[in-house]
Length: 109
Image 1 (cartoon, rainbow, N blue to C red):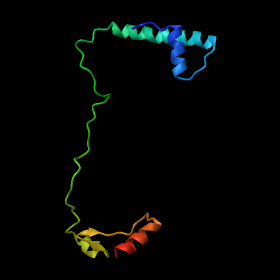
Image 2: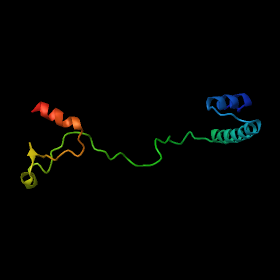
Image 3: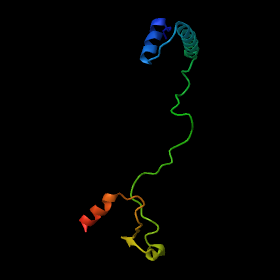
Image 4: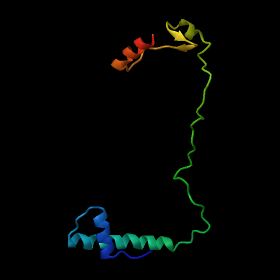
């Protein structure tokens, strides 16, 4: 890992659209050297027997496969008792309806 130079800091500042004063450049150079020093310490560690992590937790995906499922309400008496139904499904009025929906509905009928 290469050391950070004043030129590379100026390049990073330019890419980040930062205008740094001389004092800020000195501080950033010192801070970045310290950060890169920690990376050098990590590079010295022997990690050959450590498996790479693919995530920070042992959680697994609980989503089911997307697909058609038979409704348990299809044959239930609640469907028969519902005031408006179609092909075994309950029909409910639209909650959000655009003003154009009535025009389209009238065209179709």
